[in-house]
Length: 134
Image 1 (cartoon, helix red, strand yellow):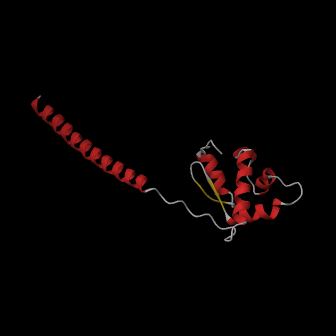
Image 2: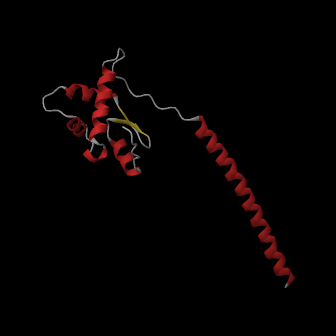
Image 3: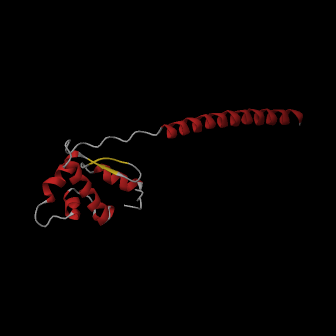
């Protein structure tokens, strides 16, 4: 799991349309409790592989690598063995740094709009003054 895969907007939309997907970030899928239960229920069935379980859940083979599917199955199995058992994924918390960045970006854009409005007013006056001089 050393290399991250970034999902395209189309892949994100496809993943979110699957009822077994809780939500998707740019490079991570959060699976629903129902998917985790599907995995556990099918894990020990004869001939069931990680690829077949993902297909059963409606995911295309080319969305995930074989090693990724095996890793997810292993994590779900480990979660099932905990005292809390399987649970819905917790939504990741938004980073305060990102929020601060967007607020700073917003202020910068406001200043830029004000400057552009001042430039437009100046140009209007310059055009009007230029016409009066002629």
